Image (cartoon, rainbow, N blue to C red):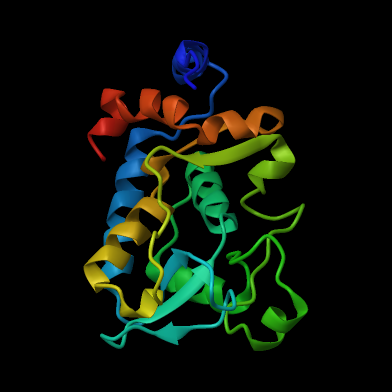
Length: 204
């Protein structure tokens, strides 16, 4: 059974150009581009993955020896909120923020996860940068970032994990929609409008 997707695309087109949609300054995005690349190359920092099957915040090793850590979308929330504020952390600030819990790994860690997490950060209602959910926004990705693999992510090629990390954490691959309509932002026809826009396309 087919259905008309044009209304979804029209909503996306209107939201794409709306003055009410929060945007990150291009200079800040360029600084985040550099940060993400430096982070990807920094062997003393973990690669953060939006993946399941492992305790969030507890590192495990890739076949190459690179440290991997599973997280949820709270991390993307933090990255985009930082960028919207004009903030770009240094690698040292990333390291310290992950270790201290100032950078969230999860919206809420389970008791078992909290007991073993080396990186204990969880999303809070009041934090700096602000939790975008509490401001009425839902963070969506332009290009889907899901790791579709039946095996362990530790066995995947590191190049694939690096590509996932870049898409997961770079604010260029993100936009917000009002939280009460959050589901629409994850629809393929909605994402396609953003994906085909030249501003996003130059990254994707």
